Length: 296
Ligand code: ATP
Image (cartoon, rainbow, N blue to C red; front, side, top):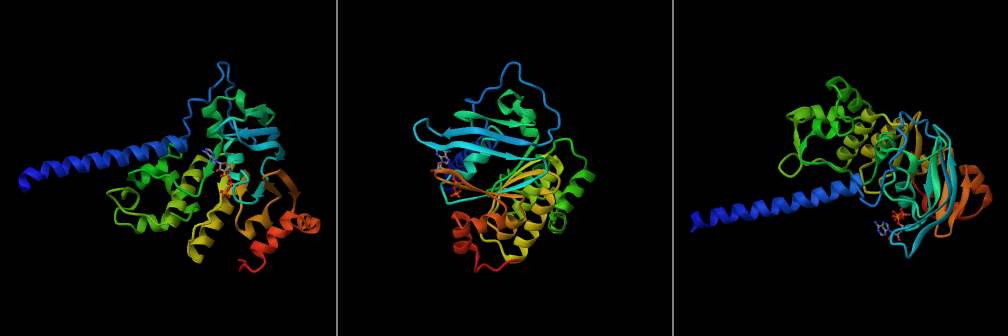
């Protein structure tokens, strides 16, 4: 019986793997956002390295053409600045930032970077200039090195190590049995949430884009890991235009500008002190969420 069952088990395992693989692939498409709806113009402009001055002109967006999520968004971020975006859940913070790499297309208005509409740029060139760290890190089954190389395919070992050191990832990687060649994923080593984050940060140090989009983690990491990651993200944001969906008070206070996004659009914009003085939504949010929080 077992001889008979064996192949069936194998086939079942294969199908399961295949399905998991497909789920992974779907996730990959999602992350890469290879959205067939988004088309590149035939005469799209070749872009080298952007400076990272970002401007939103009366931007509107809805996912399914019926319900609009964002309307009348006007904002600007100067090269090298850090903008913290705060606001209630569902206000569209993530959506707003996904428009910049053209993961989704604006329904109205325009987004320009260095005075060029993102719609006029070659999409791959635009995305080369943007690093994204979302809460849910995308890793595929393969070695750590392969996963890091996803940031820059032709990086040398020296470059990889340098980037991993900056991301505070080098130490934990070399402590693994096979170091950078350690296999991760379904059949390999399972990394912790904090370790995954550090791999994601390594990729971006390697990619070295002028624009950075961060969705600060809300998931529970221990305080020590949290600090290390905060520090790496802070270092990563230096000399880059950074837009961060901020959950940490330190991040918000360190930002050049805070944008409060609610269901009514951008309702407040200014520095921490300015917004506290205004005594509006930010001030309320601050009192509710942060006043009693241990600050480090
Ligand atoms: P949170 O702080 O909870 O992450 P958020 O401010 O980032 O919220 P978004 O994630 O941008 O808000 O979501 C804004 C709205 O768009 C929500 O109503 C959400 O359900 C909807 N939405 C988000 N992603 C999609 C999608 N891929 N398709 C359809 N609707 C979506």
